[in-house]
Length: 237
Image (cartoon, rainbow, N blue to C red; front, side, top):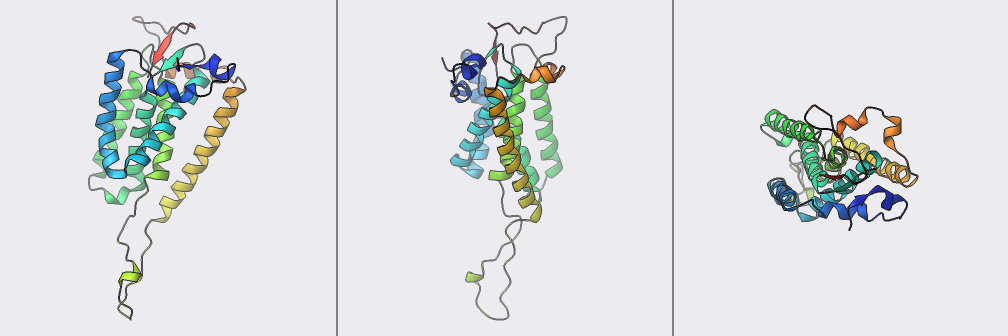
């Protein structure tokens, strides 16, 4: 009830499943893991940027993760909020990049985030884990971070608060040029990417037909497990 089932999304025109699957989980353990991750990641971001912006990143990233999952995993039913959580991690990375000059330990923060992303994506190659939702959410959140987390980079003087006269200091720009460039590029990529993905999904496009190796991004078969793609499989994220 509300899980991401591509056949029902496309043939049944139940597009709302792309969103509702974010709040469904495959058991108590799966729910607790995602809740703990959300608390660990989300509290710091919400304190810094507020509920509205974090909520937008969470929802849009979850939607982006569902879109990518639907384009690549068509035979399984998928539930979980990991795509949205990966979106928050991706937004942390882009926030660090676009607000680079505000951080003291920049390289350490960057390496830590990259390590967290790599480790979590590596865990996504296990069976019954929807790594495409992780990747889609990560990309969506990364682009959204450039749009919604932009901050002033250096001292900005409001001339209305400066006494008139020759001693009045000119107001400096709030943001740097590269921030505006990243904002524009990210916004364009988001709009084009989401539009294209939605159109392709409802036209019945199967991304695996055009990428013979992409399925390994979600599951790599080994001697200890097989990658089951039967219609009864439920994947978590």
